Amino acid sequence: MNKLNKKVEYALMALKHFSEGDDTTVSAKDIAEATHSPAEVTARVLQTLSSHGILKAEYGLHGGYRLAKDLSKVSVYELMNIVDGSTDLAKCLSDKECDLLKNCTIVTPVENLNKKVQDFYKSISIEEVFNV
Amino acid sequence: MNKLNKKVEYALMALKHFSEGDDTTVSAKDIAEATHSPAEVTARVLQTLSSHGILKAEYGLHGGYRLAKDLSKVSVYELMNIVDGSTDLAKCLSDKECDLLKNCTIVTPVENLNKKVQDFYKSISIEEVFNV
DNA sequence: CAATAGGCGACTAAATTAGTCGTATATATT
DNA sequence: AATATATACGACTAATTTAGTCGCCTATTG
Image 1 (cartoon, helix red, strand yellow):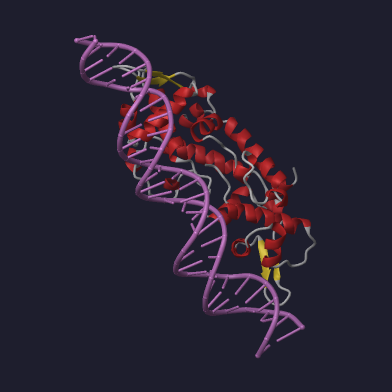
Image 2 (image 1 turned 180 degrees about the vertical axis):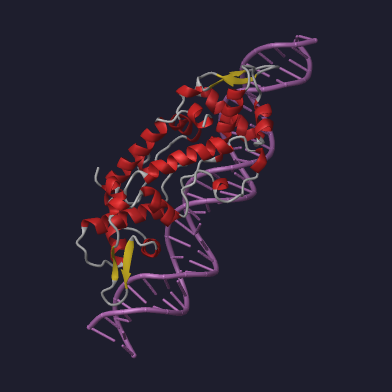
């Protein structure tokens, strides 16, 4: 429970790589090698980050990705949502898939806690995570 | 990702039930019925809460559980750890099971974020979660 | 001593997460 | 224009984690 998933970890590793390098493009393959991550998954994560404006993709012979956004302006909340799709503490908060539904006795408490957690994650930038 | 697991949800439901009732003992079976949760799992969760001093168990004919600790003194962090065993953001933080190990480029950032998250969960009491 | 209730280990099933494969599309270089 | 390199994306399989079940044991009350 409460674990980061691999995609988010790969995203953090990639962003760290970009944030430490100069502003040249780096290919998905190079990132995967540098971070010891599986190439296909890394490629997918970079695509997602690119489609959400965190990275900028460049096609072609010396293509690759580069940072497109200041990491002090990207929150952990934002990253989790982009890469994982949701940061909700329970799936009933987005979908309506819970068996309990009307019978659930902790709807409000969970909503309450969820808001606190999300506000917390919104308050932390990626830059802050890197610069201890 | 980042979801509460069912055991924590059942624990919250059970604790809410206790916190709203008078101080009579309630059996695991009754809690399971009241919260619409599977009886065996609920029983196990209550045992765990009992063995950690959150609840007090009483054997016998009219046995059951009752609250043993003020919920304003129990943090979300504590509950998660008791019921789930860990609140770490990555398993490499407790076990040493990660393939990357020496190669991981985000050890410090993850430790850093992990500490922030745990401090956050320590700062919220169960009572606070219930009383919005 | 029977009825009720907690305690615990081992197991099965379900769901989620992680990783792979194949193929299409875009673009710089030659 | 051809080719090499790189991104983009859908569908699939494998692995892991989470959820739930079963059976049996122990403790206590009436």
